[in-house]
Image: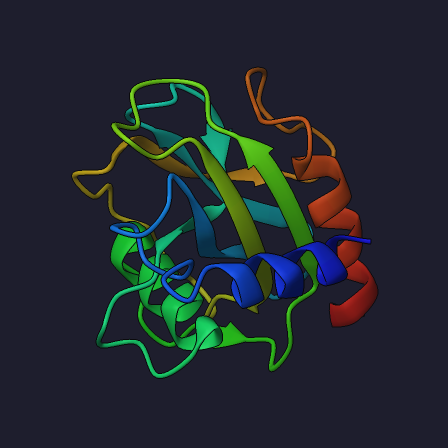
Length: 158
């Protein structure tokens, strides 16, 4: 069970929430959907060259993991006013592929959010592209675990 793995990891690594901590560490992400729950906002990650949900590392300004997920989603999408779920919808532990420096593995805590009506994303410096995708037509080159995250988000948001 991932939840137990995360707790054990944090008990063993007090600095496990920071990018400067061990090569494996916690991250926070957010799957953003439109109000009709028919489209998902994804980022084409500059380093990984794949389509992902929005998210990243915790920073000292973050009051909680949820706050980190909301901050990351807002920064990477350019969309203000995201309505983020109060609790995580999904956990995922994955080895990083691509140029991520000393980071080797992320223990990702994932939230879901609804974007305001008519929200139009802007591409940040961390992305090659950010765009809406129909849930019926996710892009080629999206990460495998995205399907499980979408299903988990929809269970919570419906």
